Length: 351
Image (cartoon, one colour):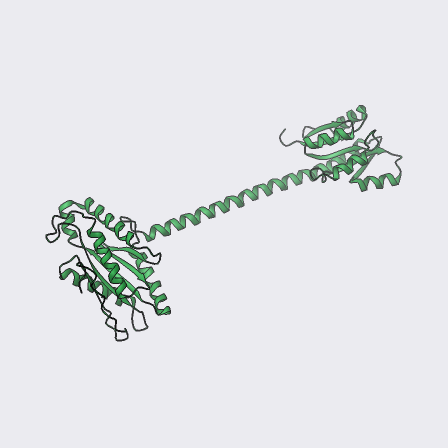
């Protein structure tokens, strides 16, 4: 039976072992017999016992020595031992038995009622220990299951957070993430007195591209552009996001107007080098982009919306001036320090 309790009975006389076995026999008990101390120690290595009934007087190795060896082993030191001995045993031998690790004594000739009563006490203690161990294992399993569930929940939350910050089509940051980063970087730049640069970018004649090639081709075109734009940025603090439709934006912390203009020109030329055919772009015959750049050192008299408006205004000035170009905008605030115009950066950059 899987829930049987093991009892070890040790006596050098087979008739005594038989008597004990008959008195203790129950379906829920597995009686294991040993005729010597050495044999008993061997059995202790094979089974987990709830109780040991140990004869004191045995040849070669008596009960006291057997008990002392049991107490010296980590595996068997906690097994309760009841010594079985003659009724005339002297008191000093009884004390020696307790010193050896006995928890109780039974005296020969055995009284069945006393034997069963004492044995049942220790068996009940073992049952309670088994139940406690089972509950502990069950609790440990529940705790482990809860920890795994917490880890999975954390991973799912992180995935959801990541998904909520990505654009479904281009897989770069979305408008929501752009707004979050802009606000946090604006506050950081204000605290540190550093520049914050914003680049706004729009794909030229994109409606005409969609009308001519179809929306699936338009989606693929935006994906290629997004991937190309993302490849330009090497610093972990810089982000590029899809602002909406065919419009993209980039936030460059700690970057002034001159540096922003260089990055914008790099973005423009990177997209142009994709050489995506655009038959409806009369000027260029391929996909191009227009960009607006603005950098500012935030102060109490300015807002992040001022930066967005200035970059957006510069973007549409680039559109009016012929597209496929970069324009630099300025936030019109008296508190902003004057900055020198950036140098000429190439044929695609105009001011």
